[in-house]
Image 1 (cartoon, one colour):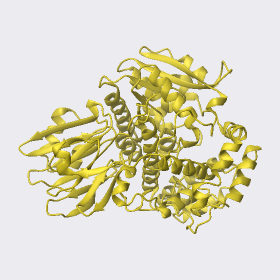
Image 2: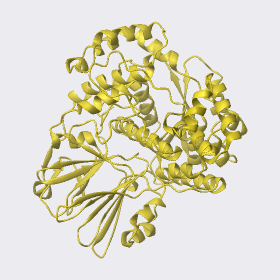
Image 3: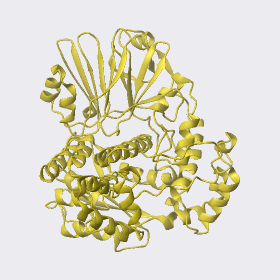
Image 4: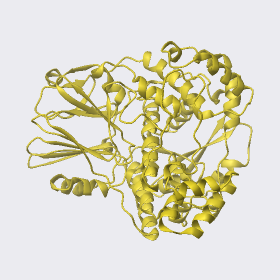
Length: 564
């Protein structure tokens, strides 16, 4: 299967000679705005009126009249906040001033780099990196290996390439001025209104992805992906994919997928075999991405699933990723209960959580009473024995329960962009509607204690879609665990994985291969393993190899691009 280029976009400072990537398609010539890769027509939309232009890049629910009104509105952010989807908005006024609204949930990450011709911004840090020397940022990499869920603040995986914070406005003026300001702000609503908003946001996010004429497939497994698949089926035919262990004909996700009898839903089953085990070499080379992708270790399975979707005619695949992050929060709301004096609910929820986790409620209550929301229910993973460079222990971001949830989703959504780039290489658009900013805004708008329950599984999602999901799916409490597959994958692929322990990271002095090899041997034998730490270091090694084997993005001057 021929590999395709990752889809990304970017632009430059107005009024100055700048650079563009080779192979780009210009959306505007002055100021420069381009797209790279195979973009569907419904993913790049523009409007123009009286010298003012607007572009919406990515899946967005905005209608043409809404875009035209946003075009001339003094408050562009208000319009963008009212749209569902994962998108970036670019507007140029009649004076040539550029506004770029970064996605509120971070699902469409933006980056910027300062060059001798001024700032260049784009949605791929990998593509921008040659403009800053093309070197991996050592501090980012060390922080990633220490705790991938608490990244180095203000850094990307590439030296000199800085992230534009999610939910911020990047402004570029013709006189060379550049500024950042916050535009995306969560709101608070009653539980009833929050549930209605959640229903609208997810439904609209799915609708805008399935009504553009592009053939669509969807995962069908737990409550999250099932909800997305059922919403998609309301708009037209959608082929679903359910993963199951080869040779197991009943139970698990198969049982729930077969129980659905819904018009417009075509079910496909993907047997998970030994050739799909984690760490198995794929016949498709791992593509280079902005950072190590979450699916790096399971690329053999992930690439096979994507190729199966393509074989069924799909060019766009929907997932349920992000649902667990949104709807299964830790008990950080205990700090809010303590602050508001709801003592009975505080003690009850702390006891419930403690029984679930088989731990004492005293630390939870102590942290709640001290207002330490960021640490409630959080287990700090030990520093990996193989990490060979100085790096501070991760300090979770402070704030209340809402800011903690937003920061968590933004980190996971940014990392998921690397999986989208993996899918792009196989000609499949990968979409994660649960990472839409409107969905995040709806969840955060609900009262924090109502988002948590030790007795009900994902109460917000279940209540918002109670009439859509069958009773069996509403009562389902969890999906299966795949820890055993990781142990078995290591055991079968032990020589290959051991080869990763003494590669580029070791040559850089970032890791000590001896304790890493010992940890790999132990995991292969079935010893209890801190998988996030081990997967991070192996993914980083495979990522560095992919980057090394991939030609860098080439850049040319804008005058040459115009001549072309």
